[in-house]
Length: 409
Ligand SMILES: [Zn+2]
Image 1 (cartoon, protein in one colour):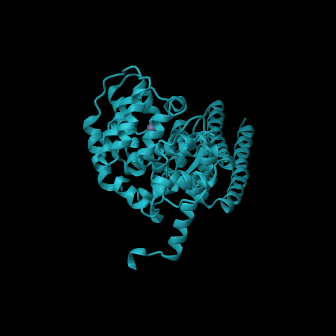
Image 2: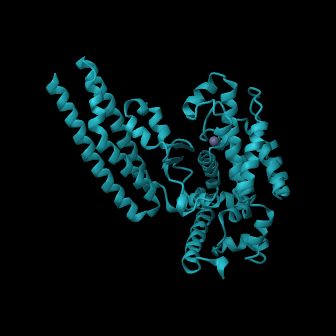
Image 3: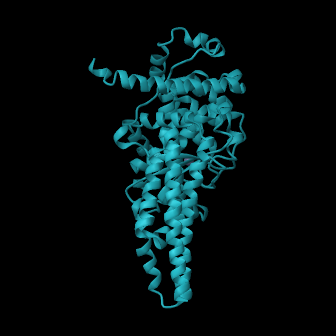
């Protein structure tokens, strides 16, 4: 029996060193093509180093048992975690073939607005899933009980956050570039998680989403409240940074999106979420857009009323906090951007139909095409729109290289 156990241990150690080596090499090839995968490369290295250096010690835990069946079972549990992690990382990497750089551009832009510059960049990867969602890497480890079976690996991520943003294969197509604003809701969750704001109001509740979800599903009102506040906060952050286009897309695509968008029994009713955002749009000067969206909202079927959960107190305090620390995209800013293109607001449609490049931030671009059904229904226009986003990012990089200190001159 001892011989069998030793063989199992050696097999696992070899598996780790072979597979992590392969993964590291493959990641390096991807990073050469796609430098925005560097944070993922760090994640791969971190996991590989930890697995490699700690497996001996972790396996010793199995020897604490006298019963050889128990020893073998423990080794199997450790091996399951190791396999899961390596396959998970490999899968994330292979899916990059479907996630274009324009998608990363919009995420980069959003996080930069939220103050995540060079020194404290948000670490994330965009992967494909069956719905639009985000999760933290340590949350994934938690969901497979790594904190018990492979504590060393779990603890590696106590102060090192890495996020996985899932989008659907359909929504990431360039012919769907108008739907990309919906992704910002997930960024809102990430920004809130990094600030730790919503959680600070609910420290008595678990930080882990799947545990919270279980409690919410069992009808624990405070768990539902935390989930709702966190949804409102993510909605608020995206609207604050991107302006009316987030709500617009949310309303326009509601019937299609609600099937794929974070299906959860514990999110606030859609009409309440949207009404809350329409109020915010008025506050930042987009009254006209807010009114038009209200008309659209009225045409939607309402959800059945759910539990009465009062979120206002905490939600409003959290929102005040973000209002004070995140830059707003309001009517004034929109108009400042438009001044770069005199007469753009009238001629915009012709310009875009002529495929004249518009070098404007995503917030302005999206706001400009709001309510334009021709562009909305034309996939080719949407591809052009994605090109404009890329052009904007290139021009920003160019400016950063050639005029790195614009305020100094
Ligand atoms: Zn959400």
